[in-house]
Length: 245
Image (cartoon, rainbow, N blue to C red; front, side, top):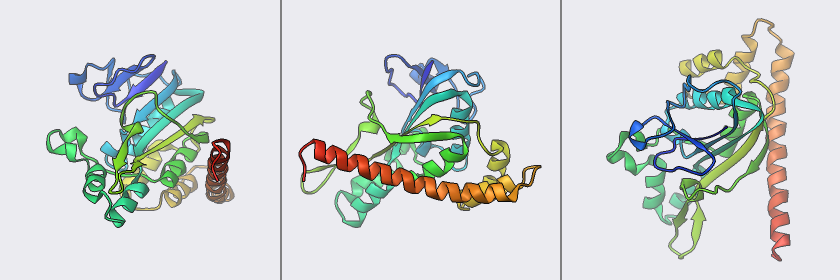
């Protein structure tokens, strides 16, 4: 089973659609922060294209935890969110700044409150969260659906710049933290660094294994550096394969 969550009017072939708004006639009407009508470990793939930014933090953590719950081992999670770093660069350069600002805040919310953007993510933020939820094998993905994951922003120089951060990963284990407890930590201090919050959550376990929690923080730092290095290598390989300098 493959789910396309936050589907709106999209009906991609091979996916069951999930949306909180019944007006779109999804296969499953559900809030992605609590998909109680989807069995645990029942999905081979979950695709969430430009969904998370419409959910307030830390409720979006609950959505990611739900994706982990319903995915089978080795199941694929594909996430797309607005690329905040790229959009901020457009604003900093005053190049398509109104367009970029509108994408950050979700100007569609003027007509539909569900279209408001309530939070944003960078690549590192997503990976920090996904790491503790049992995901690994990160890569970039390109959607077969003509949705926002394929979005571009026009620039003054008549070029186009990608505006979507597309992260793919696989579920390799159960979460290493108690997700309900972690949500409580985030509710108490939503502005706290996620890695520090996850460390506190680990320390709150009955085992109180402090050395293990310290190792997790170090592991997350090293893992992110490895992912970044692999992406740079893949980019260079693609450039060389296409005959670039």
